[in-house]
Amino acid sequence: MSSHDEPGSAEPKTELDDNQVSDSPACTITVRIIRNFEHRTSKNLILQVVTAQTTVGELKEICRKHIAEDPRFKIFRRIEFDALKLYTQAHGTKTQNLIINLGEDGFLNNDSALLDSVGVINETELSLFNDLAYKAYADDPHTKW
Image 1 (cartoon, rainbow, N blue to C red):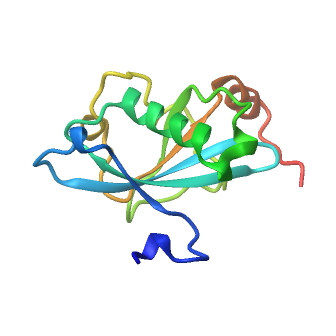
Image 2 (image 1 turned 45 degrees about the vertical axis):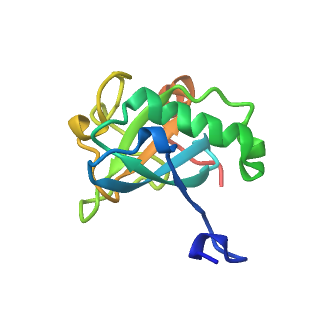
């Protein structure tokens, strides 16, 4: 039994399909699926991603597929997740905001861009969220708890 199959493990590691694997080095990334900014409702999805071939659009679709199929994400299924943003990279600085990196930089808007070309490296944390909810939160960044 692998470590992600053990009872009580927090998050399983998810790998891409065999047809997406290449000789390129793989990296592990964490995608923070954000349901609500004000209440800081989020859940982490840990993915094993091949950076040389995976595009931003493919990563969004992989995350949406996990949300639709994984029972742990049942309460997240009503949200339209349409934006992806860089939260932090390994050994880098983190923001003071615990839910998302506020600011104009870090958006991954080009769905055809390769992950390694937009700066995604091993142990990068990304945030997947609804863009309209983010804009409302960015205008008035307060929490309700």
